[in-house]
Length: 505
Image (cartoon, rainbow, N blue to C red):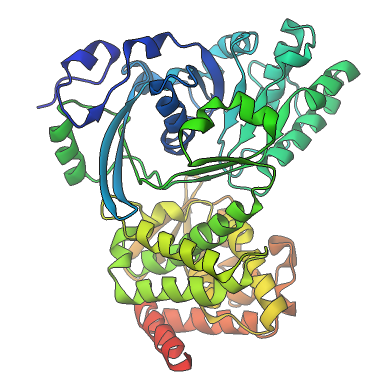
């Protein structure tokens, strides 16, 4: 029905009134940004801000994207790297329904196929910024030569780009870049800088390069906060296609809420001109409060609830919010156990306001955010997002946080691995069968064979990088909740937990 594909040449034929389209001059803007990552989060947040600024005549630059895995870029090439962002939800009490054709991306380059083109971008005087989102496992040290075509790891690729730039501009201090990591790990920019420096030493790079690397380039910690689940369900997609009148294989849904908090001073502000056009971009010397509110109340709640809701047979976040038991768990968890235990000085009005926004965002009727997708890298998310809350809760209250313990129990039920096939790992709960997409899946496959599975995992101080046996009653409580879930079912045990909370309040 919709034979017209979104391309540069077809823009004039797109007649819908509810579409924001790029201007012709946008396609001539220089490539000011080199972006490592093609995912929907980058397209829906950093690239969203850049596209918005371009439309207002502020930034006037485009994004060259590096695809680090695989060589297929046809999905982008066939559409001239154009894509539609469908913004749906509630903002300040108003219903938002907006379709934006973004021209932020100039091209997508497969590193394995065309590494030389990426190195050519490094030599461009127009290049000002590097953005990355290589998932939580992307910022890791792999001691390797940067002379490979291409290097395997993201930090080594970045170092190779910086070496090429240093040579092209003879080490000019004006050639330094602003490098912004958006991976969901604490101090992501600082961690990236440390790894790049380690690699520079491993590759025996000269002192003048290392001085330039650290004095003239700025590595920024940053925090991204926007739910960008990607393509909607088939019914919603069909409705949107009818509204748009064309097909777009890169179409992505996103919520109205947006925050990109970037740690930096005046130099960073001067380079990131696009920050001027949207209050959702915050540049500050200290962004820790944004990180803590987001990572604990939004991400932490997502992570703790993901196993519970999925195992209860609830596919999406929005459907969970219409389930009284899951809804009650989420609100009580945030207000009584997460907010008081955030390891940063925040006020109750700040946590209450953010918690309220989280509930509204989770309940967004337009966003199909799958709980199963939220379980990707479940173990890492539990360690980064939830473990600090647990430890700080014990430090403050010296007792078992019941909601957190239930979240841990659900996590262990989900991660119990009953089979492996072709290098993949699978779990099963009642009639629900699923793939476990987690770097620690092999670890859980072995631990699942033990008759003391829960105690073995929670007592593994090396796994948690913390001794949970020092938390009085915690391991026993999680084990008790785990066994109760297996006997009575997760829905029944969640109802019991909520009833207990009501009786204690």
